[in-house]
Length: 481
Image (cartoon, rainbow, N blue to C red; front, side, top):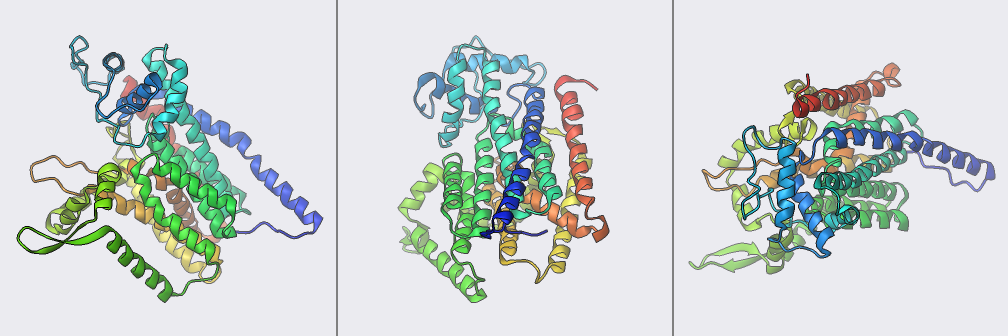
């Protein structure tokens, strides 16, 4: 695999050839975009209303904006709207058998966790089409909101295709296989066709990655810089989980500005100085009531944590240091986050089967080995831009995994239920994960089989996806089979 750069020679004939090659590349979109819309529509239609993570309350946030033309307060709600949604949930067998919401009580049913802790950007966008269908039944309003997610899903697949074209401009097979694998990743499609602010986060992450790859390849140019910056801004304005993308964004800016290899001592110095400056900016020494000195958050960071990050950083530091209790939970976190990343649907209660978990674990482990083999084979042959793109993707995946560990803390007191973070919180790293799997798969493959091995990998993804929407969903939701 290579990161070839399109020729910029002033010769007229090569320019025409380059233009024809670019036009030929974009022909792929004639079938890729309709395929993404069709595939997403399958999930949108098959999954009944309200059967996604927090969908009732995600919808409620946007509904209030659409119907009241202002941003609702945290505790604001519409009683009749909640009754309508609860009635719809009951009709679509959302509640356990024998349980039904009380629709006649003066106090309407609670729909779930309040989503007004999140920034308003995604919900304001969803409110735009909802304003056009306020007179329709609530089910149809939900499908209208899901349709916007479907559009973002198709745009995300298109962006992923463009990222791969930039990475490997001379390998048309890989250009098709990688975005198709993202398209066929069932867990990703499931959340990307739901009413959920993760949809906009995942799209903005893909656009940010595209901007970063263009910056690494071509240097500090305005278009990719604006693209990456706007994408980061949209992500931060949508959900706090996008904070993890600040690190690859800032790293990319450094690489785009400094086009030659950085010495190890320079990188180490930058990291140390950055850590010290961050600590100085965010922490201060305070004196406790008993006269001891300890570290505490500065007021600005404490306020940011309360209003946006919601990490409870003071408690978080103490929780992380409790290694005896935390170590026992990390294995559970690994299992829950990995399986929900690949093979859990709905509210996390729908699964294909344990065979799917083991299959994905085997593929990921094998492709991790394949990446090391590929790196050893290509040592000294990769360009600086190639190496930096690989490190960028690895960085994004590692930071995503660490963010799940951070999200596990602070641990509650003993006896209080603990929520284990799900893999959907880091679907923003799905594109780098897919790319690294493709690279690792090629590393495992003998040279004579390399032209065919991506098709085999794509076939595995297609088979799992086919089982999910044609069997798993149908059996779970409709009792067929």
